[in-house]
Length: 308
Image (cartoon, rainbow, N blue to C red; front, side):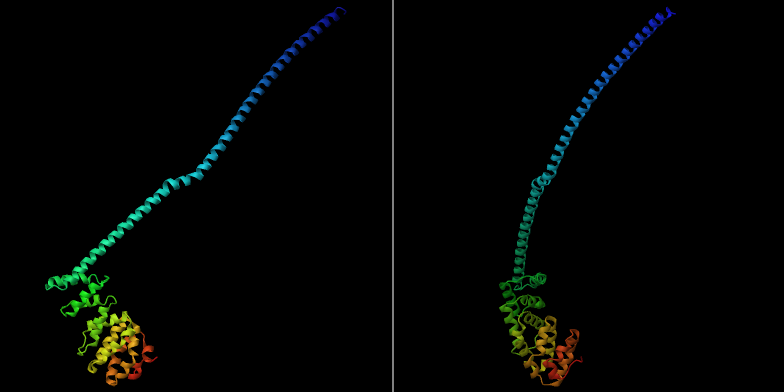
């Protein structure tokens, strides 16, 4: 038994030593693992710090780029305006100025050409060649809106006064009455005086009345009344003709005519008044002048009127 105890002790001690060795080995392994973990941690930490460093620079870079983009977005419209839009506007304005200049020059040229053409046509009215005269009338009839000069009106006036106007009298009368002038007033006033009591043709009468209606009818109504009254046999014919000419030009002139005291009190013959009423009642109805007629001196003199 005593021999067994030392043996057992030896065996136990040997086992303990073996355990210690095993524990030391395990401890060394744990230490190595810990060191390795420490190394791995430091490595990962360095990597993470590197990433953080890189992300910090990336954020700074993104911020810088955002600022640059913002500046570009602000500056780009200004750059586009000063280097593209403004030069383009300048070019467009220059083109417009050129167009205006060209248009003005063209208009001046056409006006000058038109004046020369009309001047030649008016001078051709004096020609003894009927073909030249007819060609001149054709040109003038297509230029009735032209602003004829005093010299041109004088030529037309002299041609009409010569009474050698053939079948183109209407064109010449239209031109003569196209604007207010001393020559035109003199011509039509002389025609209305009509000392030989000749009845004016309807064409001359119309242009005469049209001219006086276009100017100051109040200043010329007495001339018209004297023309109507200068031949008692033709009173109703002249009255009717002039009344229709007036209403075509001016309602005011027509009302002035039927209210003229001298005209409507000088006509005593009821038959004449009846004819006048019959001839002009169409005017009154067409232009809705019943009220004006019923209040007129002509209605009172003739005892005719329209029912309300």
